[in-house]
Image 1 (spheres, rainbow, N blue to C red):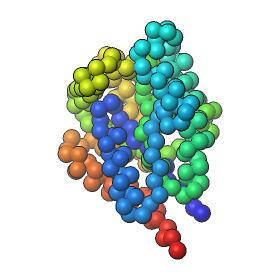
Image 2 (image 1 turned 30 degrees about the vertical axis):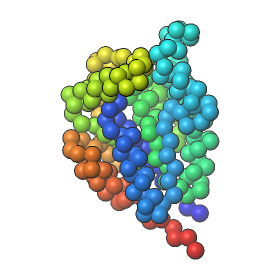
Image 3 (image 1 turned 120 degrees about the horizontal axis):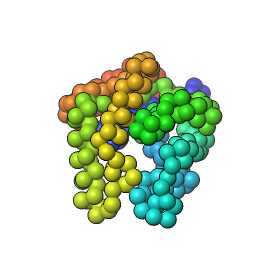
Length: 226
């Protein structure tokens, strides 16, 4: 059986990456592909516990402030578990794996936003993830101004809908998100074959069509079952 195909979705909060991941999964399944979807952090029992610690601002009331390096280490603990428990078994079974965030998020958020630098993130990736790289990364990256506006709007909507406090990332400053955006730009320039920026500020359907076109050009045809 041939190895599956590993696609990651990246972008700032509110970029629409989760919506587009779900739409691509549905279209690929309709074409006969086996598809496995997951998000990071989360997706495993350990990962869900880590996600709660990392994202819930209330966790700091009992744990205290989380140091940037500790945040990075927790992200990679989650990632190592999801690779072992979900990603590698799915790839070995010939499935297409669609992952909502991966190491590029750590490089952007902890390396850029928290200013830990790319070198430390990539060293952790080699150690914790055995350097497993996606075959394709779809980076939803409209203009900086649009990205900041969407992130703020998403954060306020989250608070209004759930009646909850902002999570730890949602309360960060525009400068924090600007550093993330710039780091994503750097990653895309460094790895142009793997990372495909989707800069269109178009409709959801138009972006979906563009993403499907990119993915279809790279993913092997599904194997017919007897």
